[in-house]
Image (cartoon, rainbow, N blue to C red; front, side):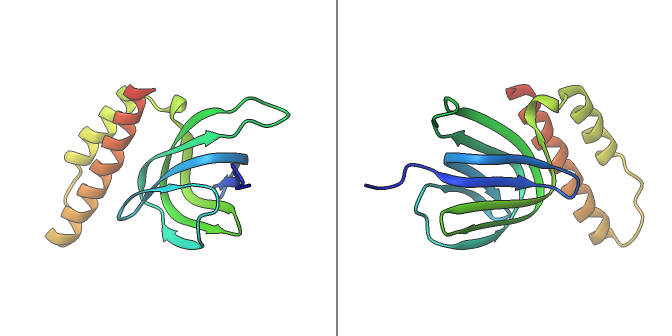
Length: 141
C-alpha cells in the first residue's frame, strides 16, 4: 500500500514554521510552481517568491487541513519522503496586509535609481514582484 503522506518542515533563519505530515505541497520554485506528492523522487531546487500551499494529512492527533505561507528565496529538498524547505523569508499569509503590500509596491516603483540602469531595473522588478505576491496573497487570505 502506498504511503499517503510525507514529512515536511519549513525553516527560516529565525524560526521553524512547519513540522508535520503533509499529503501535498505546492511549492514556488524560482522557475515555476511545482507540486509534490508522497513517494516523489529526490529533488533539490531553488525556492522562488510566492505562495507555499501545504495540505496536511489526517493523523491520529489531528484532522488535516490546508495552510498557505508567503515564501521568498532559499532551497527546497525532497529526499526519502521528506520535504525540507529552507526559506530566507516565510510567514503565514494571514500575517500579510494588502495595504502594507500596496505601500511596498509604490515604494519599489519610486525607489531612487542608484547604480547602473540594468542593476536598478532588476532590483526594482524583484522588489515589485515580492510586493505583488504579498498583495495577491493578502487579498486571498
